[in-house]
Structures are given as structure tokens and as C-alpha cells.
Length: 112
Length: 116
Image (cartoon, rainbow over all chains, first blue to last red):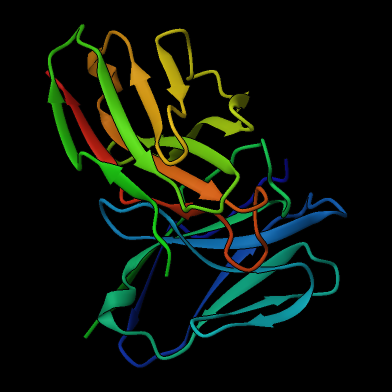
């Protein structure tokens, strides 16, 4: 299982774009990169998943360079409600029986 | 958007008592999971369940834990004799094919278990 490293915390302000980078030097060929968001006392919520290049959905973009040893979650124009813990996970997208392995995540704090 | 529903939201129990945590996964999902999160710590995998049997379990999921899908909709986690260290948030999750690329795993809002 590829180990991930991400900043423990980040601060930003409303209306700014926030980029959270995750390092995963030992990513395997068939691994996908998935980001989850967790608010206090709630379960993690899937944000976005990708394999290479760029993926965009209605809430975020995910940038993955050619070597796939890192990835960047980009949140456009954040608001106070984006204050949460963000987890970067690397593994088989098929998942199946294997459970997800969460790290400590990045605690993002958005200020007015 | 479909949801995973967990009940109760908060359970207080005495040490040594049995508790059952209940979950209703998304109806067309095939894989079901339990995770726990001790206050201030990481989300930890407990067990996965597919085709009416346990697929994988972690070291945490010892003999005092069991899971069951008693009917077509509910998925339960039983802790036989609770200990103080079982106090945590317990999250149920489900997925369509063990990790749908579009939606990932869907987690419930959790049950906060407090053992006193």
C-alpha cells in the first residue's frame, strides 16, 4: 500500500483557491488517487478520484503529474463551510474487500 | 443523493454490555464496511462484507465483534462485551463495486458509542 504524505494543516480565506498537495512516491501502476472530506462528527465524503493528468467535477479538481508521485487537490473559491479534514488515499480503485487506509489528513481552516 | 443511514446516532452503554449498531446501506450497493474513529484519531477499517460473508477484517476486529446482514436492507455491527476503549465513532459505508470510480465509498453519519 502506497504511503501518502500531506500537510497536517492549512489556512486560507473565503473566496481563495486552495491547493492541497499529497506525496505518494511509491504509488503502484494500478493505483488510483482518491480524496475524501470529513467534517467533525460526520463520516468521510468522497470528493474526487483520478489516475493521471487532470480530473474535474462540480466541487474540485485533481491534478496528477506524469510521474504520479504526487497529486494536488484544488478547491476553487472556498467558503467557511469548506473547513474540514481532507484525506488523500492511494490504492486500487476497485477496492472491493480491502478497506480504505486513512492517514491523518490535512485540516483545512477557512477564515472570513 | 442516496445515503447510508445509521442508527442510533449516539449510544451510551455500560462496560461489559452488548451493543448492536445498525446501518442501512444504499440499496443497490454490494460491498459493506464498518470503520471506527476514536476521538482525535484516524479513521480505521474494521471489516468488509460481501455476498453475505466477511471479506476482510483488520486486527481490531477480534472475536468480540461480529457483523450480520439479517435481511435485505440492514447491516449490523455487534460488540459482544464492550470495553472502555471501544468508545469511538463507528461509521458504516457501502459501495457499488467496492469503489465506484465516480462516487467512491459512501459513508454514513456515524454512531457515537460511549462506554462508561
